[in-house]
Image (tube, one colour):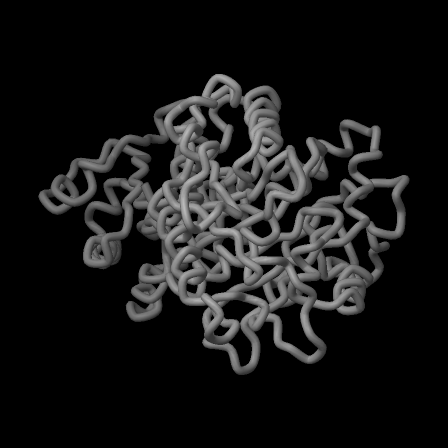
Length: 432
């Protein structure tokens, strides 16, 4: 699990605990040594596992051998430093050179801790971006893209990838598991509904939120360990790596019928908090979404850092993308809106269609309502039977459903290269 490491002097425990509590409320994992006697190898390992380091800057910290060792380790690992000054410490040569250039935050500001948490949260989200695959038109290949592009991403580019099935039709789940397995997961609450409401995973005496469409549980809950909720798609015999799935279920349709806006707001807040928590376990999180503007759409948009809209080379898909952009602009507040990227899917392999060419030249920017030509990925996915969503065969492991791992021959090499090319372009975009 990745975390932010807090480097501190033992004389600054009150400030340390205040920062720790603020990070906990923001669902950001942190690690700190309780005192100066903590063994150095353990601290070094915690720094190596961190995505950033907070340095509590004080007169005591400037003189601390432990803080200096922390900062030296962070520098050697090219770890981002986020200093936070709590008193009028006089910097020595080391702090002036290594810490002061990064120092922007201070407890003298009225909202100093809030600004610190915001800065850490930016670094946390950058470490594990969240991407929503979405188009407000059905049949454009959202589930294919979610499974195959990001299965290829994990297989070819590495990293820890989590797929989340946010579509009540749960086709993504059925790509990897048969209906009986999918329904068994839903019955045990080992499914997406446990991101929204307190469930049987969180407490033995809890009522499954899927059992009632008339009530919403707004009782707070803590995240469960990854293995209790996620399904490991890279099982026995696989090439290895981590590609996990939070399975879907029909019962999340209940949120479209709920009329208690206050309860829905709390349910959405719980979902956002859970997504932020599980960022610490992964390098990328991907939502497969439904083709409607619903409560689930809003949840996905508010959690996502970027939206990827697959589209066919036709005017119907263009309308879906236009509506999607409109929803983003009108329903997500400025400053939290995810960037929108568009990718052509199921294109002819022999030559570019006139529609695609015109879209890339800006002809449809006006009809799209935004600069579509600039939002389009350079890469596109070809039309191919290999990329059609198929039910798993009896006894076949989930990872065999991925084209990147599905055998040889029949034009598979070209399809795999297309999937990897899309993955590499998206990865570069998310890291920019």
